[in-house]
Length: 291
Image (cartoon, rainbow, N blue to C red):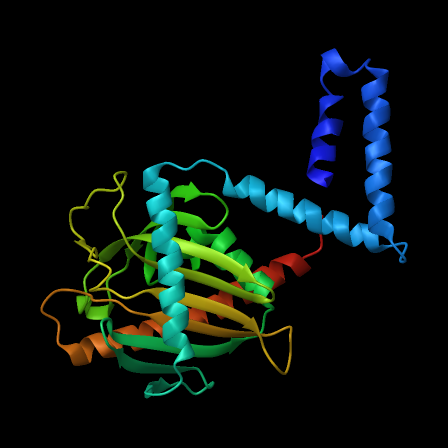
């Protein structure tokens, strides 16, 4: 009944109906009737119902938003990557320690059937999840400014609030053991309560053909598993974040697996340290008094 009432109210905003006194009276009477029904025995119940109804209507509006077939395909790829990553992270058995840093940061690995070897970074960062989410998602294109392992991140296309297609160019490793690579990825950013997710996997995009001088990391989903960053409040201190990064990537080329494993593990540990420095720098800038 309430959605119909909203439509009735919307009608009086049109010029040709504004002066229809009967319509305005009917709309007001309908609203009054609906709110009285919602109120029931508790005087504040209607607030809950209005919020719930508004949320429902908003979600329905989002659901009917029209996407092209290409956009729908990207959304499905991103959501599939997220679900696969969550499934991998949910399995607690079979992880082997690759490295443990002096500050407690650690990288684990395991072989997942149908995916291959995956790496999992587990660290605690002295920043709340919202701050990290804002940096990693909201300021994604600035990552090359603070992470020396990344030359550039560019958002090629945004689809709704949760999905984007990005192009990332990695820097070569010391000694050029692993040369520069570039990645075209579909990314899915979600928030579930206090937990934030940023999942992705390689894809193709017409706006970013292969680049000269770098190895394009494009493989079929069955050959290249998902990546995912999970941000969750630390159990002991909600102002800190339990940061988990699942990495599944085939670097291609004639590189020994032992070197690849070492490079990927070190890249994850380095990322955590660079992220800490970036967040500390942001805090310092916020504390500088204005002139």
